[in-house]
Length: 318
Image 1 (cartoon, rainbow, N blue to C red):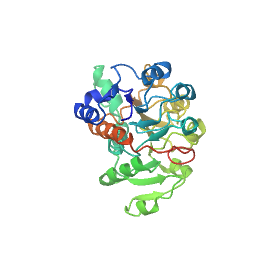
Image 2: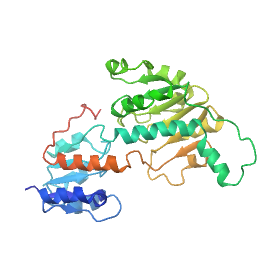
Image 3: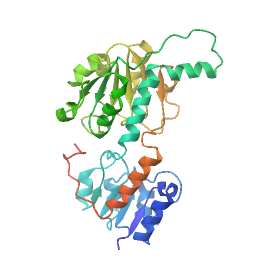
Image 4: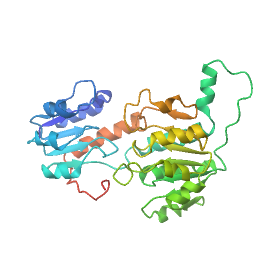
């Protein structure tokens, strides 16, 4: 029976999954409620454990060096940008991760934010809260009839394509992978380059994995290539968009709006972007549904006995 430690507290919200884990692994060690464990606190908690069922805990070289008994990290998270496969392999640690496990929740949020931004709901709601509803306040727009660029058409991007079908939009799909067989199922999807997507899209939604090729991808120069008056939605990961450059384009009106669920530094409390009337934000809630977390925690349990060797250069890594 492997010695298992769980340095995340989300199982407390799903007693049936906690009971399932304890039935199969009676001596499992649970994290106390509180902040996400990192660094030395994570090391101290995992001392002697052979398996760690984790969330966004970072397994750096320094952490792994101090955990000689650790053989498996089983991820409950939807992303892997906090994991370095070379570090795991250096210390003989296997991992488990399931791609696309939160695709429904994130894709629904992205489509919600498209409508939210194009209708200027955030600004108009703030007008009402301030008691300034006195007359005409300008117009939003219908999503229908516009062109939506989907940057990254993996598990989540494909769900966005499906959810957008009733909206009557033109979809420009941009991805380094060839998903032509998927695109053929729809009359309104066109595969294009990134530059073409930037040039023609009224709304762009980002659904890329965070890795060396995507960190810092949306520079000021790239944002300038976007169609004037376009909207940018990011429910993927932070650090892909230059937030200072984004603020400048929102202030100038080059971009009419943006809706972000993720930031370069989180928590993003008091971020300067929050002061802009055409910027809407949420605190990384893309997968924060009961359905997604039930699936992710179940996957973490499954991974205890199904871990594999992480390989650099093999999806989801660079």
